[in-house]
Length: 379
Image 1 (tube, one colour):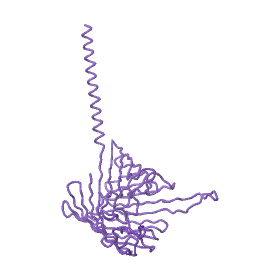
Image 2 (cartoon, helix red, strand yellow):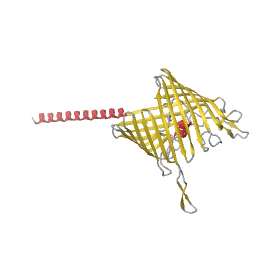
Image 3 (spheres, helix red, strand yellow):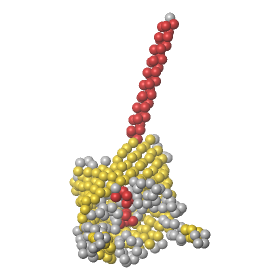
């Protein structure tokens, strides 16, 4: 009798163990499924060919083998190298669980390095690195390094219609590190407030002077504000043993970004900006008409007027208040689901001769025409 009871007891223990193991495996499967559902990987790879039509296309050397002139390029970021060139590889890893999440946006290559030029203390590969908390359906807090909220264009070529970038984008901020709060005030109205490091300082604030940002949005139109000192406010005089005020002035930038669907196939984007630091800075406006000619092809134009104040340096002219008109015509052909081919013709015309616009006779001029053929693969 005792043996039978022991046998039943053992069978009961075995059954309990099997059920417990099954429950554990099921829980693990649910956790794995949940983790997989919350994780995503996206990104892009781009390369291009660029040639100047009326400018220098190679490095020029003197009789000693020293470089005396370099290939011509607009005074704006990205797509400035002649011949066959590479852009960047971009990998965006994101994970969300419940109402919290994190994003790691990593870049490799010249375009990415140019975008994170103020990244010191770690490899220049962090385009964005932040955590966020959806406090409610209408409030989100973001903490870390994130791309700028100003301007029409962005760093990734996937989200831009034109492959080359505008002067306003190139000389505005690329990214910020800090804390921002986004508020959805209604279906059409949004508000963002931020406290951040000085512009483009990824890892730390070397100046001990925070910057402040704000964005007011209404139905796809955005008014952006940026304010803060972008340099050292004092230095230590070793001869007197005293701290001396540098009288550094704060940067102020106001920026409008928006657009309108004029028809089912025709879109008009707009960007206008003004940046000033004690009389030095720039202002400009750009229009972005884009027309979808077919399911796989669109054509777009960027017409930009950009003017600098007090030898800001963006145009490469000696005159203190030079300006430039840049017209860029871009085609966008989609191949399959992931590849976009972008042929582009760009013409820059400056009000003064620019050291960036050098022709084959090593003469500087006031205009530059260039051609770009780019390939952008996104996943």
